[in-house]
Image (tube, rainbow, N blue to C red; front, side):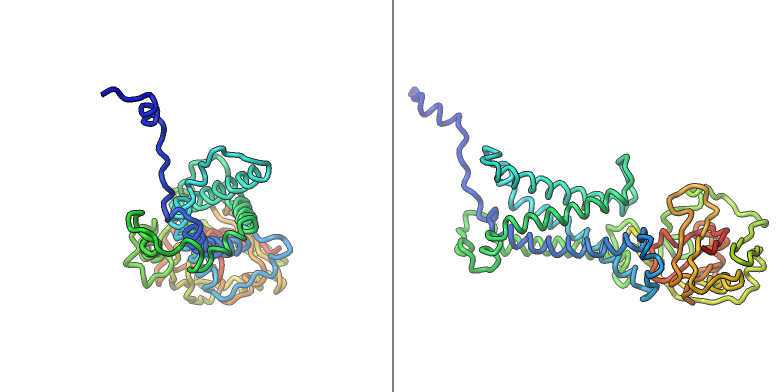
Length: 384
């Protein structure tokens, strides 16, 4: 039997697919609420991390050195919340993706502005979380410096989130509670219900968190399956991000000396440094990539070295490494760190002489301080 032209044309045209119930405003609101909490926590802790790494000039003298575990906690939360946000972001995009490809793409000037704001929101969220994930594994497949760009896009993301909430607030408020219109009585043939989706999403977030957070929360270290660093793995029981070879330091000769520059400058050999009163502290080494491990450090208090050089009690200190290249070969400490009795020029780690990868012959260790600023292979202290 010959098919009529109308029937043939109907076969060629796309058949409209009914909108799945899980691609609705209620599901998007619930997932967005979870995502907003994780992104907010990630931004707040990331802001603290940036201030500790790159403090503005007016804040250097006021950065706190206590609690000693402060940076370990905030940076661990930063990486954990950013990692947890990844499956939440994917779920959020899945719930709203039909609206991302509506036709026509622009219906009015107001609609165009809304679409642009959504594009900025999606692009900044994807970039921020993926670049943070790649930073954890120390892979940088881009030509720009990570830290300033990641910091700037973080502010862009927060601005885009606030703008999105302001524009969508009427719809968000309408679907904030379970009694919102259209959230009950979903037919079985439409696929999994909202509770199943949210339970699966919660399980995914929990699995990602449990298999990565052990790199900073050491009681869960045995579950640390997906993180690039593992507590207790590395020279002398501590992970190493930048080895001596990567820093261009293959050996430290017997002529190494520590130079302390101040009103009364002086030099010390390694033997003379070991002969000074030694102190032992228990401090975490907390890295910006999210891993942290507590250890026993033994060495000379920095404040004693500075006092011998005639430094003012509230002086800043510049710390210089033997390393010739690298963004953190020269660092500075404010007076709160320099005067803290827990801040050491460490010579020993867990009862053993420092290995070359951990900064032999001497390295800095201070409380509540990012790992990149715990300078290794120290050769010079300058009173500022």
